[in-house]
Image 1 (tube, rainbow, N blue to C red):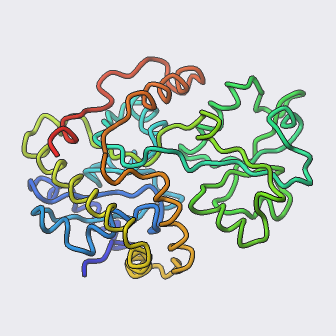
Image 2 (cartoon, rainbow, N blue to C red):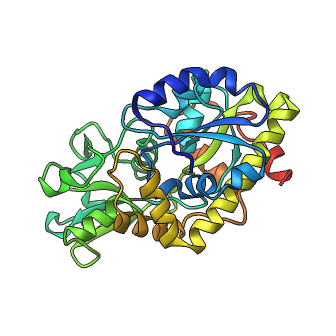
Length: 325
């Protein structure tokens, strides 16, 4: 079984990936985050040989707190990246011409949770409180939400104070923030394990509030789409990946085992990965990787309203790949 590439070896192979990627069937995928079930479809596709069936040689690079997929692909270290649309659009406007080729995640898994002892039961209670937010491209949905409800985020009177949050629930446990950001499939599970839940939390679900921005889409560099061989390879990649997603969601125990096995850091634990597969299944449509235009338009408008981007993007998505499935 092939392994995903980690650590020093990842850097070496990333540098050598550019010439390899010239081959029509060799592709490098850069994940948005560390090896975990958030990416089960790709890991399962690799482990079960679905990419081999499509005559593809896939290298999967794990992400991490110091890895920006947009920078990796801009530097030639990947052919395809998994990233959130807000980050992709911001990168595109800053000169990295990313194009969305598929959108397996249809719904957002982002939430903000506040222990009930903070007294926060609605958005109206936010002023004067400290809210934990992830950065490095993950902050855009939060700022779009605050802009929508008219709250300043600079700590001024009547607004909120923003804490750059670590990627866990410690800021809430340690009282550094009154509310923290969580993903339904990851940190919320940690909160449940720590004794928190709907009975002692106020939960703001971005999707339920209509503030969801598209997450975990597949993006490539625009110039590569002029090469029919590359588009064909992308199409086979998406087809195999969606087969991986379907298998993972139908076989969550096996998918979790695969994730644990492919995480060479040893950090992934079966129970949490099994929970993650279950939660991710609520966000992914394994049968339809096409971009939903209504959600796309809402995402773009939110980014314009918050001035994360300054102009409506042109050519930021293509249906050439999903139409070819």
